[in-house]
Length: 287
Image (cartoon, rainbow, N blue to C red; front, side, top):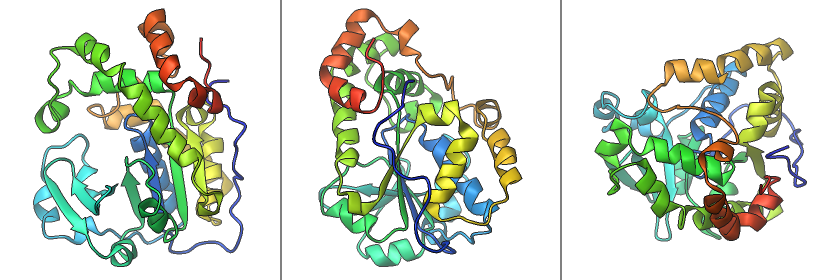
């Protein structure tokens, strides 16, 4: 099955239940990051965790919460960019603030979102300070197609404008760049020190068995007090239909293996040439 792997991590967290966790999630853009974020938020709420937020306590937040962004919650999310020079929190492209005290930042943030690649030392410092690191992966061909749709939305045109005239031009240029970036990003997290406890989840696993993915996430996060029937309710509320209905500007098609009908054999071959070994490691079919 696509997205099936031989590198499974245990769905059960060792040790006592966590009452005030700090969760760090990461993934290449358009890999199901917002879906994962919403799932984690709902699981934390179901477990009765009192959530903290760094960004919501900054003066800019009172302005930012009224900005028109990709989805209503965007200004409320604790985003952390791990750059070679610094830790930076931001709200879309409109606000950035360097984090000079990582401990103080994480003390105010329950759930942190990032798209940053793994950076030895800098990423390790974050991972050692949080309770759980969850990395989401999606087939690079589908992630690329999803991004090709997203870059031409009104939000992206305003905040992250592309120089390309249309979707075909975007794909023609990015197909020579994105697969290598994807492979490097994913490989970095796959090869991180196992002691850091990076949990790998695929978009395809969430599509295939959402309830099972939620149970696994709760185990990884140490959330032991969620009733079994609550997972059924959460799975319904997190279905693609429910998510798209509430966030149409950010969620488009949500399909797996779109690449089979939307990429030419030549385009697929170029992606495999750049990212094939990592795709195979993740269980993705090459043809």
